Length: 77
Ligand SMILES: [Zn+2]
Image 1 (cartoon, rainbow, N blue to C red):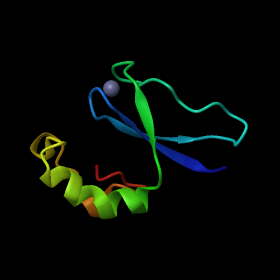
Image 2 (cartoon, rainbow, N blue to C red):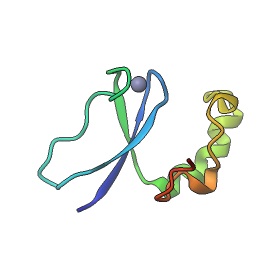
Image 3 (cartoon, helix red, strand yellow):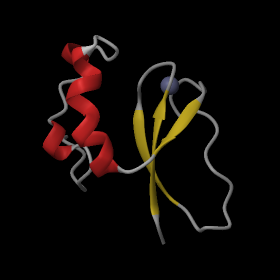
């Protein structure tokens, strides 16, 4: 079953869902019920991550997750 990664546009919570192809995509954040967007792939996101963070888009200091762990099973925690 493929794993999909989502990110909440409201609280920046990131989570993974294991879904069948036939399942509908997640539409709300499990933490704040905000709008979520599907991340294209964890690898692509990690490569682009620093650029995003450096723009100040993400409050990196509030979410000190190592980029190397953002896509792996340990989730950096
Ligand atoms: Zn949220």
